[in-house]
Structures are given as structure tokens and as C-alpha cells.
Length: 444
Ligand code: PLP
Image (cartoon, rainbow, N blue to C red; front, side, top):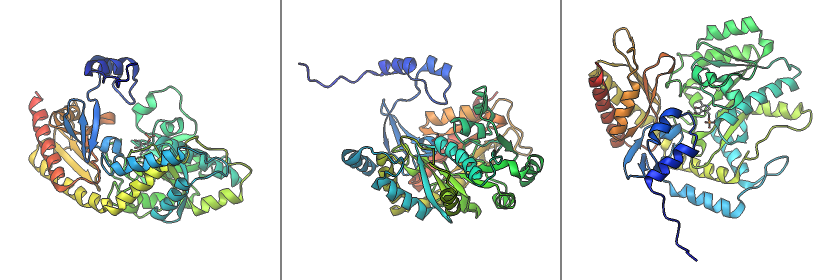
């Protein structure tokens, strides 16, 4: 018997198998077929990813804004292995429970603002938002107002790709992917007036909830207008509309506070989380509800709470989340996010001063953006957006980040791991600077 370990496949074989068998999420499907995968990553360490050829790159978007504590933390692997060996899985349906889910629920209640004290677990952000939408409709039904079912979101918002989450997403390309979306979803412009006009036209008695990201991530790291959320929150209160904060990106220290809403002085009725809750070391999300909503759900219950995922409160994912949160707290990563975010923004300003084609720069904590413009004075864009070629130039120099070009944008966005240090921020800034110069020199 040949007991030798199977030989590792060679690179070319992996590329061919990837092309043939692997349909990549949110991907340029034709290019994938022509070029194969741009990188096959094999290792991660701190802010760096290493690919199969040994090339190291800075993970300037924390992969998908989720690897908050950085790559390669062995403690999380150990915790996962221990939990899997002890109790890999047991259900949390009905009245069954287990320690990791209980401990994590209690910890989340402690760290979330106000009376957001009860959590429903999911496997990710899209499931969290779909849960929130079903939950608010269920809530109003129990309250004797089943016609209160419309969900209002904002233009340029991103809430995920499940049916409800896509229907709430304001970014058109995600909506255009499919031909039929869920009913009773609407979106408004990002002004209190636009929301007020919508309520006036549709009637508050038909509106269940308003949902927003504290800072719009996928749309291009877009900050809310000043005092916007305070006004929206009071409009919601006046009209009995529930406020859902989508903290999937902004949660767990990303903006320099534990949660993004803390930056804007509001406490939502419901909060969706995912990503940074485990820093990507396991798949987990959650919907956190206020004590009032929780009590109403109990008092007015008409039978079973008929909503649950097989992996709601997966023991290993919960154990990993607890360790991840411990690391965020023990290593002061929220304060580091604030401090390094300020350094990153200072660096962006230097780039802005130096380059004719850099317009607005902005950031909060370790979430930032650089606008590319043809004319600094008027803010006019290039006919052909430059962000894709800047992203390509950054990649050549060892920095991964994203360019946003949908809906007329030409924006570079960044969200490095929260354990980045000053030297590493400076390295990022230097690469961005060089990448802009290189991309600019290619423009005719
Ligand atoms: N909400 C926001 C604000 C997000 O940025 C994302 C993902 O990027 C989601 C929801 C969806 O989360 P997931 O991809 O885990 O389903």
C-alpha cells in the first residue's frame, strides 16, 4: 500500500481546476475563464497575505473588511480545535443551548450600546439583514399592525445578497443581477427630507423599518451628512418606524469605536453584525435587538418563533468570536484603529496635496477613501474611471485594495486590519502615491 501523502498539485493544475469547477462570488466571470485566478493565497500573517509563489501583499481591505485582528492568529485556531473536539455541534433550536452561544450573547449585550441586549445568531451579514427584515414585520404583526411591512433603505447602500438583503441594497448593479426582487422594499436619497417625503407619500402605517450602514462601505466609504442619523432616528421615533443599523462592516472597532453608531450618538432598535465578530476566522453573524423589542416578542408571542438557521449559534464560530473579541479588547485594537486611522487620513491628505487628480479624501477609523477627479476645482471625473488601473498598479507594488466605479464613482477604498502599525500605514501610503503616479502617466 502506498501510504505517501498525496503530492501537492502544481500551480497550472490548480488554475485549470479553478477555472473549470469554481464559480467565484462577485467576480468578472469571463476574465476568470481567460486569466484564471489572479492570486492563490496560501498564508496570512498580520496585515499580510502570501500567495502560492511566496509573494507577500498588504491586505488593504482586511480581505472583505472582515479580518479585523489581522491574519495568522494561532489562538483562534486553537480555540476552534478545542471546541470542535469537545462539542463540534449541537442545536440551539427550541430550548436547547450550549455554553459558547450563551457566553457570546452575554458578551455582545455588554459591548453593544444602550439596551441592545439580546442576539439572534446567523452565519453572516446577508442572513442577519434578512432576519432583521422578517423580524420587524413579525413584530408589527404581533403589535396588531400587519400592514406595517415596508423596508426603507438608502441609495448606494449595500446590505448583502440574500433575497431581502439584495432588495434593500440601493446599489443598482447588485439589483440588476436578477430579474425579480422581494416586494415592499424602497430606497430614499440620503437626506432627512427625502425620508420625510417618503413617509408622507406612503404613510407611516405601512412602514416597518429604516435600515442604514453607519458609513456606507461598498458604495465607496460614504460618510453620512452631518446630524443625518440623529434626525432620521427622531423621524423614526415620531412615526413608529424601527431603526436598523447595518454594522456588518462598521462593527467591532472598524471606525475607532466598538460600533459605528457610537460615532453619531444614536442607539438603533436593531443592529446587524457579522464580519469582524470573528475577524473571518469562522462564519458568524447576529441580529441584536433592544430589550423593549425582546420583551414585546415574548409578551405578544402567538406561538413558536418560526425563524432559525441550522448554524444559528454554531458552537465553534461562537467560541472563535469570544476569543476574537478578547483579542480586540486586550490588545487595544479599537484605540489603535482610531490612532492609525488618523495617520492613514494624514497620509491621504499628503497624497491629495501632491496629486492633481486627487479630489476629496476621507476616513473614520480604519475605513477610508480617496476620490479620483479630472478637475480638482469642479470635482469632474475622468470619462474613463482611473480607479481600476490604480488598483492594478497598487497590486504590482504589493498592496491590495478596491476601486469603486459603479454609479459614476471613481474612488479608491481602504480598510486595513486594526492591528496595523505606523510603519505599515506609511508603507501603504507610499504605494498608493506611486500607484497614482503610474496610473496617471498611462492616461493619454
Ligand atoms: N451588510 C453590509 C454593510 C456589508 O458590507 C455586507 C458585506 O459586505 C453585508 C451586509 C453582507 O454580509 P455577508 O457577505 O456576510 O452576507
